[in-house]
Every structure is written in structure tokens, then in C-alpha cells.
Length: 168
Image (cartoon, rainbow, N blue to C red; front, side, top):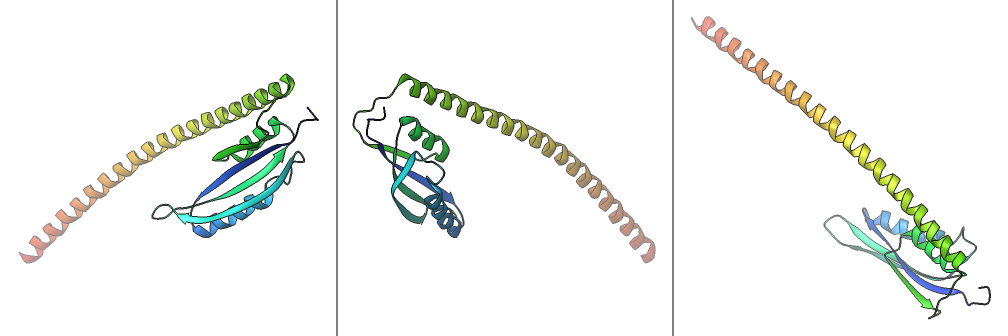
């Protein structure tokens, strides 16, 4: 595997949200930090596309990054860690790897999927609890609103009685 050329890859990492300044700052951070902690990744070039307005409030911009990696597992690691919206393997045109590296790749994939699955389950549980709490509080608010209406009706009746008594 060591005699094989490095894999040359182009990815696009998109950032969307608001305000526009936040998107610009985040794009710069992506450009600065990509590949810094990975010895197996060498950045060849980066290009930031300025944010464009995509809705009434939101903006979207992206960083195009070209890099080289020693192994396909390194490329897959980048995909998992950075979640690019596009991945293009530029060269070599034919890829080969060992079954050990593919096993590593599949194990990394499985581990990441398990992490995402656990996170989704945790978020679903939190969402269910929040919905229950909202329904409970909504019921209390409705009860309080009804009580306020009753008190206001009582006050109005008292005022009418007072008006009748004072005018008589």
C-alpha cells in the first residue's frame, strides 16, 4: 500500500444560517482548522465562497478544499468528521486497498452510525419529555386563564351592583 500514490480529493463544506457575519467567520474557521490535527491529510488548496442570501433571513456559503490522503480510510474519516456536502476523488482513477484497511473503514462506519443512533435516541427522548412538559404547563395556563375570566366576571358583576346601588 505504501507504494501507491496519495489520494487527491476535493470536498465542499457548506455553512448555512444567520447572521451573515457568523457564516463568514465560520467559513474562515473551517478553512483555518481543516487538516491541522491530521498528519495523514495534506491540504493542497482552499477556496472560500462568500455567503449568499438563500431566504429572507438565512445565508449560505461554502469552503472548497482540495487535499491528499495516504489511505481511503483517511478520506472516509474526513467525510465523517467534516460532513461535506460534496466529495470528489480526483486521483488516482483506480483505487485498491487491503482488506484490513476496508475492515477498519467498515468498523469506523459502524462506530459512527452507533454514535448517531445514540444521539438521535437521546434527542427523541428529550423531545418527548419537553412535549409532555409543554402539555402539562399548557393545561395549567388554561386553568389559570379560566380562573382569571371567572374573577373578572365576578368583578364586573360587583361593579354593576355597586353602580345600581349608588344610582338608587
